[in-house]
Picture 1 (cartoon, rainbow, N blue to C red):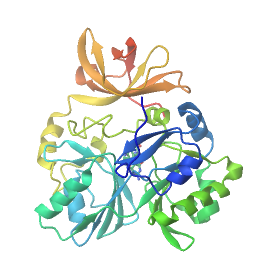
Picture 2: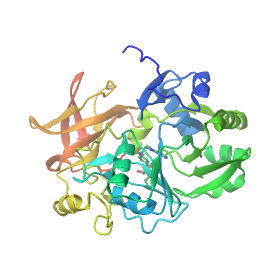
Picture 3: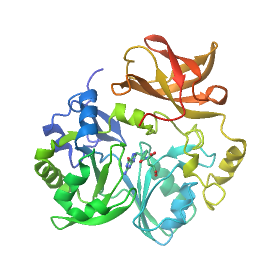
Picture 4: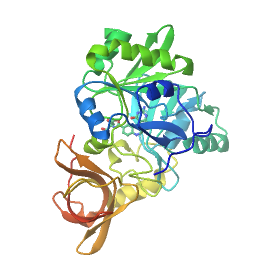
Length: 367
Ligand code: THG
């Protein structure tokens, strides 16, 4: 593939200078912003992530801030997950749906206070939907994209590195909770979360100007921990079953099809705009669902379009993300499979660009 031309529309991040200094080899575009995809190699980055600690520029996980008396009401209109049990200091993974129950995004919601939320979005222009709802319903709430850039610290040595920079109290932050910590006089919102299953934190950096000082402090403190620049890793995320909006699902899919039914409380999420539509689909149940699929043979190519899945010559689904897994010694992938073929152990065929491959449907992801 040719190079992508830089321009102002393709936004740099507060950490881009550090990413370039670390030798980034490839980027993708996410929320109109640069997102690194490769440093040494996808496989070397994967091995390092599972053994050490990495700092990830995930500033492209842009925040939508809701601020005002109707902030909580608006947040509940966006998602079928019941937000009533959620307290300030908590994060929730929340499907966001339209009036048909179609997925618009799958962000992390961060409840800062009763009248202030961040929605840490995946790759879709959710801001316009949220502003449209707020305006259309005449809600008393401000909706904008603040200068907040997440920086993730991921890997088994994350606690040690974070404690060195923010103090031992950061070790006490529980999964999907956050606390406020100081860095050189700046308030940092730090959550135990992140787009890997290797453990770690996400630092919501609230001022672009402190981006590089924080980046440098983390690398200085982690020298003897073998800290490196990293990024969401294709192999690790597929092994872990972490979905990628726009790749694995779109607004054509309901949360139930995406296996996100456990994050829906459609009966009690009063006010959710897609609630009636989802009550209908939840009653019948989905007729296709996300499944892990192992694909036989040697390394598959990069998956940049749906690969059809067949059984007995009939199309029964598609694969949307796939890669070779060194640890499981097979190709791992994420598919959407019709009900008739979604049981664990079902044998299917996947049409890859290299030809037909035998494959097996599973129930549980690898990590
Ligand atoms: N962190 C933050 N923002 C994000 C992402 C993130 N925005 C974009 C993208 N990632 C959104 N998608 C996801 C997908 C999965 C998870 C988080 C965001 C995730 N899932 C866990 C799981 O499925 O096991 C935990 C879910 C839970 O138990 O609540 O973490 O990574 N800030």
